[in-house]
Image 1 (cartoon, helix red, strand yellow):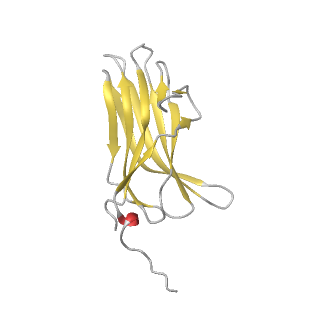
Image 2: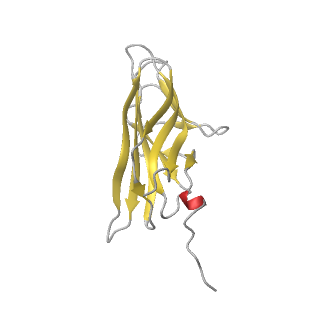
Image 3: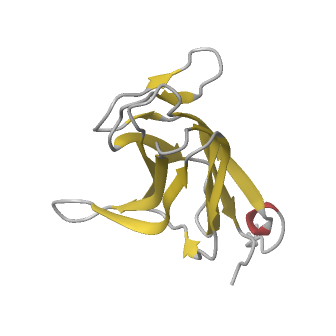
Length: 162
């Protein structure tokens, strides 16, 4: 029996991977809603971190963009900021390497706003031994109007396959 490598179909199709299984990172305080899975970051937080693992990737996929989505609460003179970093962890001898692929920096609001910020023009090719995650860092002012609700992260793959 002869095996043929598939060069068309699912592996080459553009797709968006939805990542909504986040968990608390190393710093700050946040709360995950039990009913809808959103992550809530209240007022007076400095650099609180949330991790969103990226699963559903296949070797050969090309990561083209990622987005962080949710809602920002803020008020004039009291900014809320959101940063996000798409990261790749690679195996190594004695230690792993954790490197940034792309970043969304200083999304800032001084009024309530929808959060739908994207980093595009990426071209990272997925291979075995790589694991991916998005690190979201949020800072909120000491004001009752300042908070963030994250619904998740979206990752676009295979749109500009080489």
